[in-house]
Structures are given as structure tokens and as C-alpha cells.
Image 1 (cartoon, rainbow, N blue to C red):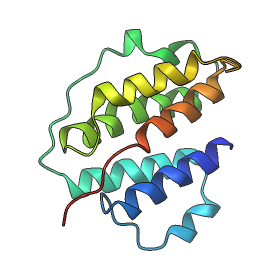
Image 2 (image 1 turned 45 degrees about the vertical axis):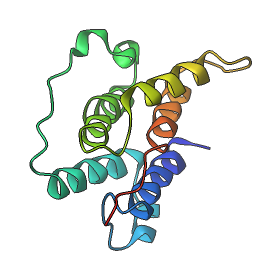
Image 3 (image 1 turned 90 degrees about the vertical axis):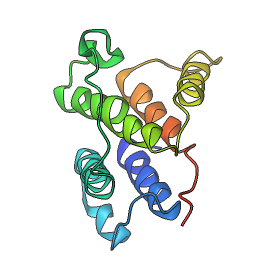
Image 4 (image 1 turned 60 degrees about the horizontal axis):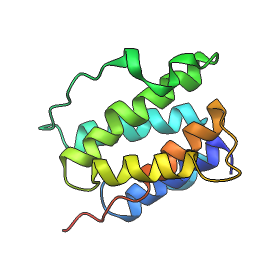
Length: 133
């Protein structure tokens, strides 16, 4: 899976779990992974305006060493903002998400590089629960 597919999978998952509404998922196939992440963040902000995010310490973020600034920005949005929206609104357990991420990146055969870490961050957010209507 590549970053665009991972971003699309997260958007589809959040839509299918009734966490956010995306009018036309197919339109996202023409977007970059960064555009999809920005749209997810926007939809979460619109859907859960009461959510108060905590300022995170970016100095200790796993993406700080990424040479690609765009990829670094996406990693920070995923883990510092989108993850908080999902956690604070009870769709995702932070500890479970972190455990998933840590187990995945320390598993045998996992190749650690910026892309694989961000793909794993996408996967760790796809374990969120459905919104009860």
C-alpha cells in the first residue's frame, strides 16, 4: 500500500464508521495523500467543534528527522491532531493505537523508513470504533 492508498483507506474507514461524512469518496482518488489528510482534519473540526486539542510536544515527535517536510507535516497532523479527535470523542483508545503502532514497527521484517512509519500511523487510526447514531 502507498501513502495515497493509506490516506484514502483512513478516509473511507472514518466515513464508513459514521465518524465523518464525506459526500463523494471517489473524488478523493484524485487527491494527494496530504490533501486527503487535510480534508479529514477539516471534517473532524467541522463535525466535532467542541473538541479541545492539547498542544503536543513536537520536539519529541517520531517524524522530526524526516527529510521530506510534507511527509513530516502529515505525520504530525495524523498523530497530534486526528488521533486526538478520535481519542477525545471516544472512537479510538490512545493506548491501543500506540500499542498497535509500536508492535507493528518492531515486528520482524518491518523496514523502518519515513514512508513505512506514516503508513503505520494511518493503520493505527483505522482501528477506531463506529459512531453510535
